Image 1 (cartoon, rainbow, N blue to C red):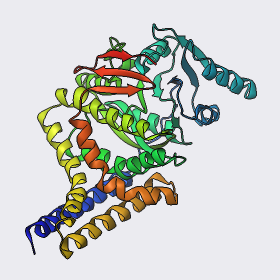
Image 2 (cartoon, one colour; image 1 turned 90 degrees about the horizontal axis):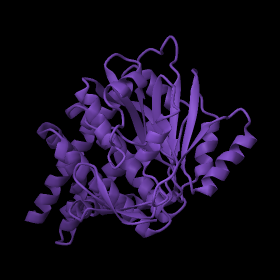
Image 3 (cartoon, rainbow, N blue to C red; image 1 turned 180 degrees about the vertical axis):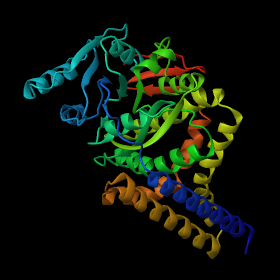
Image 4 (cartoon, rainbow, N blue to C red; image 1 turned 135 degrees about the horizontal axis):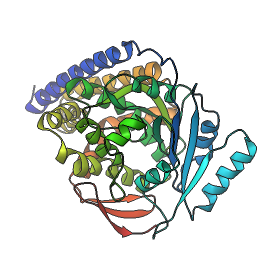
Amino acid sequence: MTWPEIFAVGCTIIYILDRIWKVAVIRDFFRQPPPPEPAVWPSVSLIQPVTAGPNNLQAVLALRVQIDYPGPIEQIIVLDKGDAPSQLLCRELMRSYPLWKPRLVFTDTDNGIALKTVKQLAGLGPATGEVFCFVDDDILLRRDTLKTLVRYLCQDGIGATFGLACYTNWRSTWSALMSAFVNANSLLNYIPTTYLTETFTITGHIYALKQSDFQAIGGLTGMEMRLDDDHELARRVMKGGLQNLQTPAIYDVDNELPVLQAFINQMKRWFIFPRELMLPGMRTGAQIATFINSLPNLLPGFVLLTVFFGGRFSWLALAICLLGFYLVYLWIVRRYLKSSTPIRGWSLLPVVALILPFQILAALFSNNAITWRGQRLRVKRGGEYDLVKRA
């Protein structure tokens, strides 16, 4: 064998061993028995910041109308004062479902679009629930998502609970590529990390905290100008002597990315945030665990590069990497995400396995400017930002 072939075979062995370990960890995670249901389900304030964008808000809110929770629940929807289409949609749904009575709260900012943290803080004003649950405007709640978060939250010592995303938008090529990327990686990244180190962050799509704990740790106080509400809140939970808990709650995400630039913007935002806002404040052990868990994702791409030097062992190594990638993806999607992937999604998986890890590397080494809902922001270390261009 040539040196490129030896390198390819070595990368493949490490990659397959990494997949085997992660599969074993995921099986163990989902086989653990859930905690008992609370004797009395606590009341929940579901705080829902909404920002005008391409996502299917009607489908999202239609599921919130029918939410299944055995205790009292109040829904608080926070909108921009100038976002007339979203306000109209909410009121049309309220007329169609008279028993659904969410509280509508409005924010008014200089540039017309309030950041999510500003909306969350506004939603806390009227909130009275024993549990505060924050949920984004592209999250399609499954029947048992909220119950699972609250059930795990009722254990002693648990400060915050959050779940696992399943992306479901396959309508455009770029939405489909994002769905394939997330569904191939979310469980493999988030769950094994909890076995290597303490849970140092919260997935911000949807998370829940007891109101008493939330108030005791300072809640979202001082976060009006921060982009990292989930990372900072997780740090406050740990400083308060409580635990951030990854739960098996699965929720769907309908994320609309109509063009390539929207995909590039989101990928960059996802990886600039941890670089600027999470990694600098992490303990060394947590940083090492993160790198150990993430670096094997680059290996199939390295194997692909060796193919250009020729050699049948490089081709064989590449085939084994892709076979392992496909098999693990199929297992995760069918068994745990309980979702389906159309032909479009299956055809994009080689891009996810071989190309996107290098796009992530490029994002990690790029500048700190991001685009969010039409606004151009410059991210600062510590969580703050500068507004470069308004929507």
